[in-house]
Structures are given as C-alpha cells and as structure tokens.
Image (cartoon, rainbow, N blue to C red; front, top):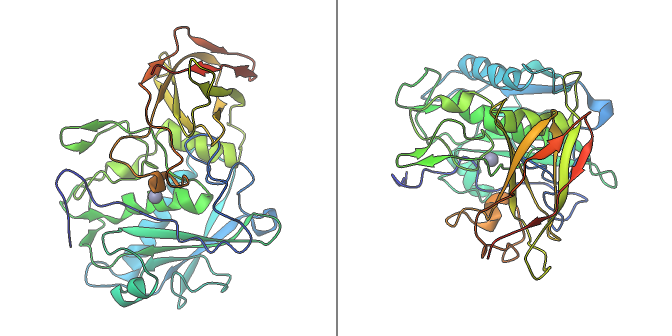
Length: 334
Ligand SMILES: [Zn+2]
C-alpha cells in the first residue's frame, strides 16, 4: 500500500456520487462544506434515516466489531442537540456497500476486486456514495465502503488504522457534508483542532478523528437544525482591490471567548456564508485552499479556484447578535 510520511493517504479522494439528476457544476456554497448547498439533505419522508452494516468481517475485524464501530460513529454526530436528524441502526444485511438502488444504506468492507471494478483508488481509506432523487436533489440512499487493504482496528491509538475515526468522517458525508478547510497542519501532519471533515486523515494509529469539532457540528446543524442550533450568520463576497471576485476562497470565523472556529467556502462567484453561528464577536480570516491540495479534494471544478492571494485578516471584529445575519465583504491582500 503506497504511503507517504509527509502526505497521509486520503480518507476519501473522490465522491463516487450516483448523481441521477444533479450535475457536478454547482459545488459547495456554504460552510464546512455543504456539497450542494443546504438543500442537499436526506429526503424528509426517509427520516429518521436507517443504516445497515454489511454482514461481512475480514482479517482485521468481525462483522460485529464493525457494527459496534459504525454505531459509535453515527452516534457521534447525534451527540449535539444542534443537529436534528436521527440516524438509526437497522441491523446487519447481506447487501453490500455500493449495491445501488437497494434502498439499504449499507456500511462495511468491500473487496479489492470490487473497488477496482468501481474505479476507486487503492489508497482511499473509505468512500461514501449518495443517490439522489431526480428533480428534487435530496438524498435517497447512501452507502459507505471501507477499503479492506488497510490494517483496521477498533482499539484506541493502537498504531493501526482506527475504523471508528474513518467512519465518523464518512458519516459526515452520509449526512451531506463535503470537506472542510479548517485544518491545522504541524510538522508531523494534521494536529488537534482540525475538522473531522478535512479531506486528509490524522494518520495511522491516531484516534483523534473520533472527536467532532465545532466546525463539523455546525455543518451538520446547518443541514439539519436541531433545538440547539444557532441561526447567526456572516456572509458577503470575497474580492480583490480591483473589485474582481475571488472564487472558492476559504473564510474562517473565530470567536475567541468560545474558542470557536467555523469555516466556509466562497462559491464560484465569490459569495460566502458561514451559518449556524452563536452570537459573538468574530475574527474573520480568508485563505486560499492549501497549495498541495487539489481543487478536486473540495469538489471544486478543476482549474477554477483562485489561489493567488495572501492570507487576509479582516481588521475589525464582526458582531453577530440576536441570531441575525451580518454582511461583510472582504478585500483580500494580493
Ligand atoms: Zn471525505
């Protein structure tokens, strides 16, 4: 299995989306990344959303161990009352992940042969697919496929690949989230404080990916607001001094008193919105996508991302009050 010490294998390098009705031309608009905006959510008539686990273990884990880890991963997203969608374990199934149109949202190991058939990279740890309803653009089915080639474990910080951590990330995709730009990269790779929906993993042997950050929870709450969800938002356009719009910039709001960091992506016209924010005074920062990340890692159209600007911090704190929206247009440094 090819691995690089400086660039860990991606958790998920592509969205294997069976897009019956949706084109890939309209990617993320809002924070933490909503892949197709706030309407790309589970069909209301399918809620609470059930999921099954493929009745197949492998050399590393039994099917029952996979059940335990899968349930823990899905439950992680339901711990906060900011997220209002219920996810229910329905049992083991003889269906397999990426058997489509079976109305069974299946999580589990695939085989290397099957991954090859599907055209999936062998360095990918796991992949989530969505099936959406024609004309409505809502999610009707989703599967999570796990690459059997890694040495998986259910033991914390064991030195092997933590299945639960990977499934927490994939469960975020299952909800409809894309990839976040809130990552903190140190000398040894990704470090604490990084979003679980960052496109790359914390690495083999780390169980850090079991813990959601505020950025992750906010993304899920924007898609499925629960009783604890916040309604404040900051939005506007990202532009240059010339007035030219900046496409697919990453905008991060930081609230120092709460130590809260939530990010969002501008769209192809420079519009950004960070929703789901509690009241507070926010520091705003804009950065291009990391130089070594591909446009595709964030589902942006290839070659359309503006990277040639400097990290910019907005000079004044931005006030969000009474759960209202605050407009801030941001001029980036060249
Ligand atoms: Zn991913």
